[in-house]
Length: 276
Image (cartoon, rainbow, N blue to C red; front, top):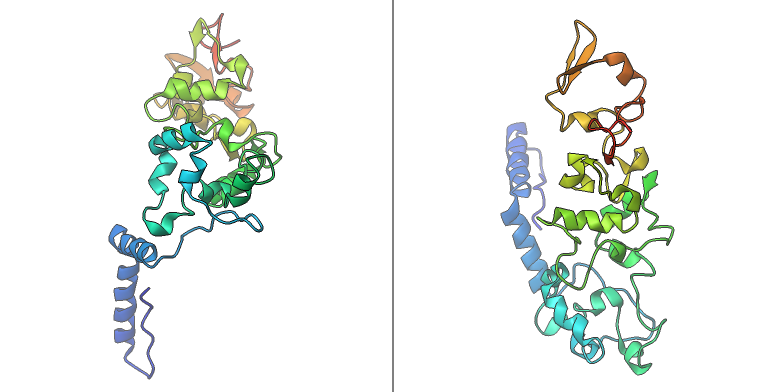
């Protein structure tokens, strides 16, 4: 990678500044520069991330895995993770074994636990690439993945189709993933909260948050992201919501849902205003 030019003898200050600017623009050159770096790494035979290791085991290749796991290998071609699979003679360790580790001992044993890496038992394999998610799971309010009570595959499918279950345009399907555990929020409700139709992640951070309930915002700002037509009047000290007037003091005592008002945040069977 190109390094910043450094003077070997005293030079004019203006020339030094011009050189720094030139190199700064080169570094910030965006996708083209990044692409060249990635291509360079790929063509030089170096791997970007080392696969998990198993003492004494060697790589056998995906074709060997398919002798027992034929359906998984077949469907993996449709998976998001398949886009990261390396091609060519140097790719023997970049298929199944990039996540499960070298498989020779697993093959020799005819399968069985303890001879191969199982990411369902530990998320550390996933964190080798998704390091930012490990940081999110370490926040005060998070799904218990680091504690071993959940695994990444409870919500993600690494072997087939989209890694985001119900992702993309399938928002209802994504909610179904959450509601496999959060059954009380499923409904159906006579008066459902429209935000639920937008997806649980409209209000909740799925991996972790600094806010209770893994909310993306801790106060009424969460509601006002959608209810942007609601305006606070500084002259009267009131807030106009849906055509009605509320005392701003109520919000000061808590959020929209903890001030004793709109407590049925997912839906209600008795109140169109989600009161209870």
